Length: 372
Image (cartoon, rainbow, N blue to C red; front, side, top):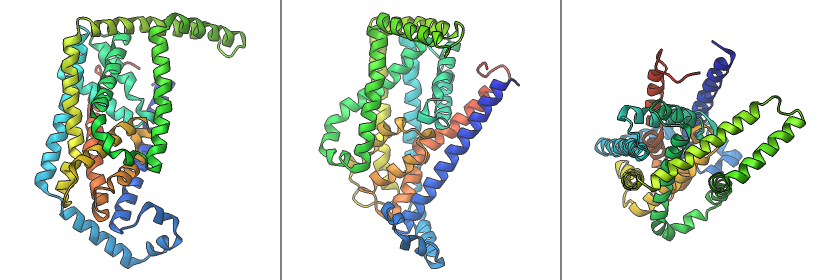
């Protein structure tokens, strides 16, 4: 095995360890705090830690956890599993429709590898970025160029964001939730991230010549300063801008002959995201929450869905559990909150990551996996 392969394997193992450590730590904290009926601010009080050293407090915590788990309805849990399974199937169908819009239809098996394999690698890399190279390789295996594959991935994300635009009238009445301190800070961070991404994207699409000229000028300067040696950087830039040309051609196909298929993709996305958002109130009913505020629970699930992809930890681990508990506290009693967050993350993320690990292991069999 080459040094590069060993480094990649080491990075993957490190990502898995970080993901598991952050996830387990955050879940345990959420479970203990909810069962002990503590808040996150209570962790700043020395008296809280003194109480947590007492045996009778832990006995109460474990009793409360047992009561909360026993309150879970098996029927609602099965219903929730069915809802999220249909959600994932529609995601896979959407990918098939998007690739079909480029003139290349892919199989359900390939779509599963793309979706779940990307989900697993995204879970063990910062900003969930590790899945994109695998997804491009999977699409490339089916005959899509890097530019065409990039267009598919871009439109996949754009369709999900378009659902947010459709849903904004439903979110607006709950704008006070968005104004809370922690969430407001994350939203400002997301706005900067989105603005930078859109600037680079639009520059590549509509100012390609100017961007190319500036990129090669920078490459020449780096070469003169001996920061970059040889022609490797120039060859990389030439290849990258060639893929930008393919990407622009794929976009023209989407808005030309692929418009009908793109519409079907949007409908599949709309239904898939609706199922995802419905999972929040379904689980609340399933753990025995009285008088579930359905619309508010849906809006909170929507906020979390669009926040987490840009969290810097692998798979948003740690932060996702804390943010979920902070938001869902307004619709879920504290003593049930830990169990709710555990089930929410299990269905919306952990099961997909486990399925992705199985998919990756199958792809790594000799002759099937991506080239090194």
